[in-house]
Image: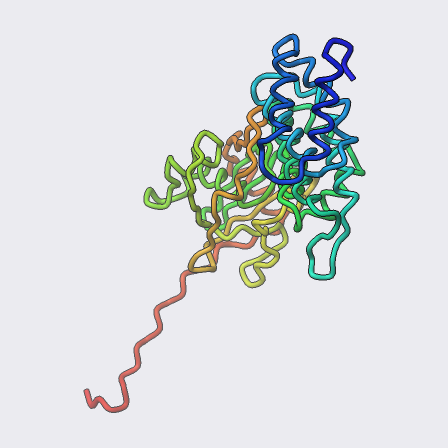
Length: 338
């Protein structure tokens, strides 16, 4: 416990947290948090350190969840995320390990454990949004990453954190079969290919007719400057290197990580072909969560010269664009005489 805060206030907070038995963010625990903050120096710094010392040992999942959310809120209000990250991470793991996967694809464990997991996850996302290096720490945490994968389908908290640690950055060669042209782009901080498709379609809009170019409101949402609900659709059929006109598989799956995009000579390559579906769409939920310190982006580095394109065309054995099919001659119905 803190040496600068009244021990009685801290005991009151721990007792209230251990006895907190609902998802309600009020009552004695809320009062105890306020009392500790009001008695704390440095605008709450002492309170944060005191809560972090106790958080992993809180026995109530509801109390732990409430304290974790409060720590996340303090980070969002400007407090150093390094002070509270480890305590929230340890608490997340405590409740994650208490759950086991059930036969129906869900998770079972102590009452309230999923609530604790969701809110500790939310708090950790807040920590990541305000400190880029914490993302690298999470990504390198093998124990945590294994738990995230195990419970991703059962907990929003695990799903959000999985998105955070899945974010990738790399250079990408884009080859357009129909245009017989290419581009080199760099994408930053993107967790799934649907998000990548949306940003790609903006930077390569020169290859699109005006009516197919993405709307400004959609791009604001994709870059995290707007929280509106938007939808996008594929302007091309996104395929892996090695696909052809006659055998266009394998697709680049929208739900997958950008790490799923194949490489040729050490460089990721995606091939754009004319759409093969009437509609392939996705919602802006695939753009979340967006970390303010690591905003998603795709930058056009340059369009490939003719020489560069031909070299990449040979490397990936890219086919020529399919020739337009000649219109079939209309046969006169048998019942018509002339």
